[in-house]
Length: 143
Image (cartoon, rainbow, N blue to C red; front, side, top):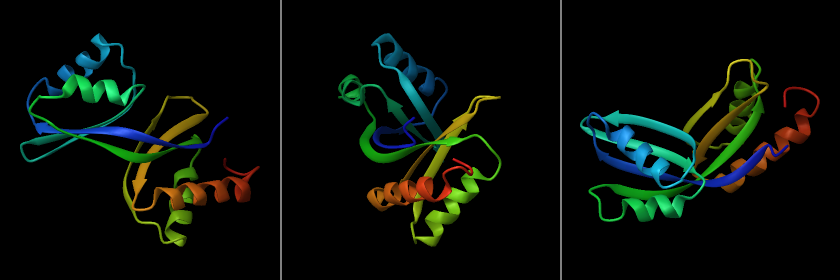
């Protein structure tokens, strides 16, 4: 199973309001775009949505010309064992290597063996390499 992969997310910033997420998600669904992961939050009267999708280009094309700020950002997607302390181990290794994480989000299903974490740092190449080291060092332990 793949444990780490580099990906791109579509980050959309717009004025916050009732139904904004519904509108974005429906637009993608109606056009056959699968949402693999989402993070959403507000800051004042603005809303930010980060989507990992099966077709970022299609999402960008669908939103072109709308009153939104759209950018595509590099992220790293980790698939980890869903056990206590795994995220702490990964975060500790990143800290030891001097990696400054910009943001992290993730989820798992109840009773699932695996969890998915999405993060971005100022150096995603280095972060991916650190995670590869962790997998080798910790094989047979947490991962």
